[in-house]
Image 1 (spheres, one colour):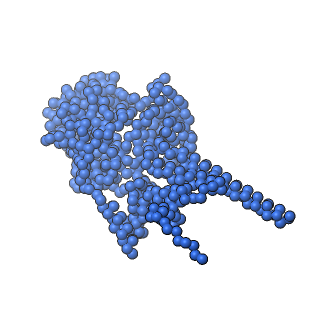
Image 2 (spheres, helix red, strand yellow):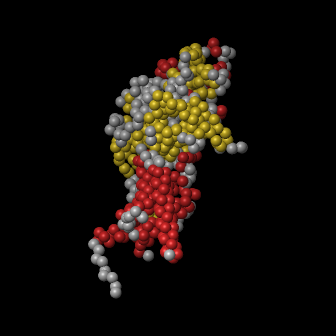
Image 3 (cartoon, helix red, strand yellow):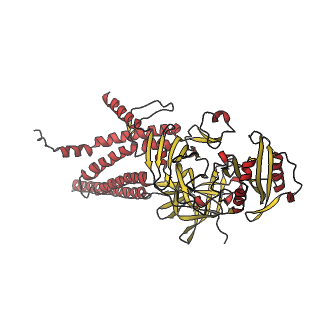
Length: 186
Length: 400
């Protein structure tokens, strides 16, 4: 009986040696690989230092917070539908009338082709799990990409969004396609 | 007339015990029990956890438990250490103590081979590295990722917006953490410190606005939180998550990391943007694999691949070599072996999953098996020849 008891005690000692608080110093690095050069949607971005990247979702392949108390959200998505329907959907969220055609929007160059800048402000309707909010602003672009569209949208309190407009435009026009993990065509 | 008792020194006595059959028998019984309970626990612990518990070098003792966590047998020594004792016993008894002569030469060689096989297992246990390289058709890769271990990677972005070589907080430091533990991390290369808390080995990530009731009991960061989920017996499916506090003086960032998100999150300190992510351990390869074509098929009515094969180009320092990787026909490079382990075609986009293994003792058991077989065959043949010769001599004596 003594030996099993002793073995149990030894086993218990080995399993109970656990520190709840530890300190370590880490300097081990890893070589860079193609993993480090893969970008969502193959789009490399250059965000301003005042923006902070947070986790994305299925609909937000790139997701940033900016402005006072992270009041402004900037997010990129790839979705279906045309440029005009998406632009009008955004306008509809602010209770604005839909545009008849794309000439209603400012054209900018994004990722090597034309994109359309959508701007709105006012009361934002409830949607996507978010409550309705007064005095909000929107700046975004919609760009055709094959059968899909690439969208970049900035929303938040109207004044905070307006303060980020310049940074947003600089960010949008600096986007570039990078696909180092694709086998180059011969 | 009784034989005079031989006086032995302490060293001789110890050697006799070490080389004795008794130890070998005890080791074999223990190995049987360990294999039995390890296999038994595997059904609810999962393969990885069971191997880790019963066979890992760090397992000095194991306590067999049932699915309700109740102890079902006496504590047993870890398998690794039982095999170490068995190897010492075999070396002392099967090689050093064994009578040496031409009649036992083949047996001696086979003992060497079996010992070599045990050493191969030890080397593999310590030095074997394996990972999975996932490549879509038309793409290339130069890294593999661990099946079940996740590291935290911290890096700075350079002025071109590119990531610099990341500093790695290894899974070895993270996995022992419990939810209530705190790990303080000093990063000499960075102007800030980290504190890892709330580590969960099996977690899910959720948006607080989508699950407000559950979010009330969790720390919500930037609208997200992690919560514990039931641990899967398939370790690959367990996704860790944790909270990280980055601090430099009064500047503090609260972050949440989840293995479910492969993209880094960022923060800015002293005018430099830094990124951080929790991802399956990255293993850079000394070559690139270009997946030119991959084909396969599923079992009828399932999404389980029945067969698959890949045409790849291995690129090393500009040298290009084409390979056809078929099941049981791997590609080898240096000490790396690359097998195709997975195939799928989600949304019409085929990909291959290559299991990459680097094991210095990869072929040792095979060699040991051949040597041992040859040695035992020689031994039996010699014994048979001697027996036949003796029988013939006896018969001829009887005739004369």
